[in-house]
Image (cartoon, rainbow, N blue to C red; front, top):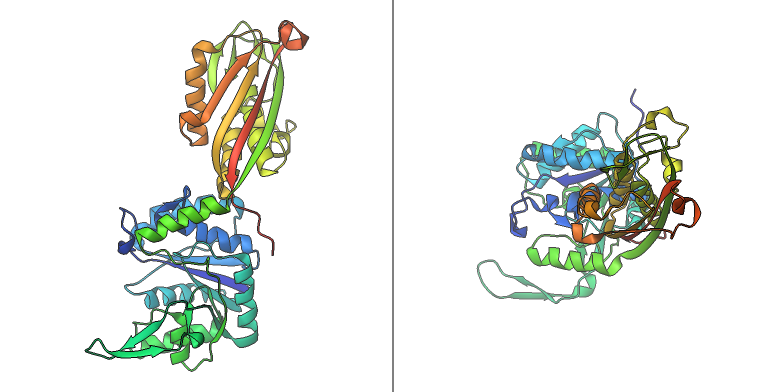
Length: 400
């Protein structure tokens, strides 16, 4: 017998999202350097109260989705189940996801729109608790505008008392068995136009509780929504800095690696990896900004896997960690300290190499060089050192 998963999330991402404009469906468009869908997945992952998630996608989007899933799985390998494929309506897409979840049925399922990337951990916790208490629950926010219901066929109608109205959001939370049964009954009755699972649950006779939603949990539908979302991200972001430093002694060899560029020299360096002091310093700087240890923590020199390894692997890993946190590298500033080799002629290639690895514009990378005026081990030509500062923009750490 399959083991029940306590709480699963079902994210609906099979729509085409044409009203948002652009060449891609809206769930794959970027805000703040990350797709809307990836932000929604990571929001549920970081809530920590959701055990697993299934994403319902359009068959044509499989390659796009798999790129996102691979990044998410770097942070949590078991969080994402294989995707389900949606149908022509939201209702049929949700049912496809529910049937896929039924292979190992959860106790509670959260049904969430991919186009709501700003769902908070607190809202997820409220949804789960509401489902435990009531069996079916949807988040709602007060309506600020006056709402008027028109008569059919004409411009006249009546004004509704807005104190009793709520704008309904997702994630909507249900006992899994009950919402799966409700969807099956609606399909058997030939009904496929429900745009909201709470409405379908009501049709099936379930009492649907409304709990407090959040104004920030907006749905992205139009180009203006994406503009506001970008402004929201900029307003919420934290700027963090990290400092990195590395040193290697010279030894036998005829080149050194700096910033991923091979530079001819009369000596090499003594190191477990390829000894790229510049990339090592940059790696520690990014990890420092993330508060995530240092290069030795993640790539210990005692591990034979990293013998002679290219240091770009270490820097790429740090950059990926920043991306997985929803972060963005704003600037990298580094200084190489040595009497030789001279790096002036190689500065452009080094900057380009670092920018390419970090996935940022070359204008956000600064590389300088200096001597130590014949003082110390670098002044005596015994080794080479580098120091670096990384400036990152990161979403704030949420207090629950």
